[in-house]
Length: 140
Image (cartoon, rainbow, N blue to C red; front, side):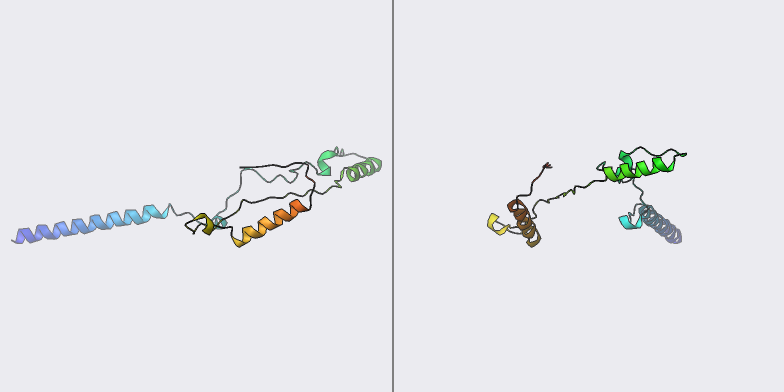
């Protein structure tokens, strides 16, 4: 009987140690997979933003000055920069697809949200103003 109790205590100790080890492993291994919110990470995009994305920057349209340029060449470059400065204004209209209330069971109960109804009216007004468009890009 004494041997049985002794073996039972050893088995309890081994079981407790095993359970503690498994629990500890689960907690410690899970800690490495936590993903922080994007504003807390120090993510650096691989490609930097192209400030001259529309190729209208006058600096990129005029040849750069040489290091030993004269005042006349500097003034000529400034005049060229002034000539290359864009005078037209571009209007980029980014139109978002409508967002519907999807809680309804039938089509009559699925309607545009208030914000998208406002967007719809704004788009309709733009069409009524007959704004001239050079290009129309559609993305699906």
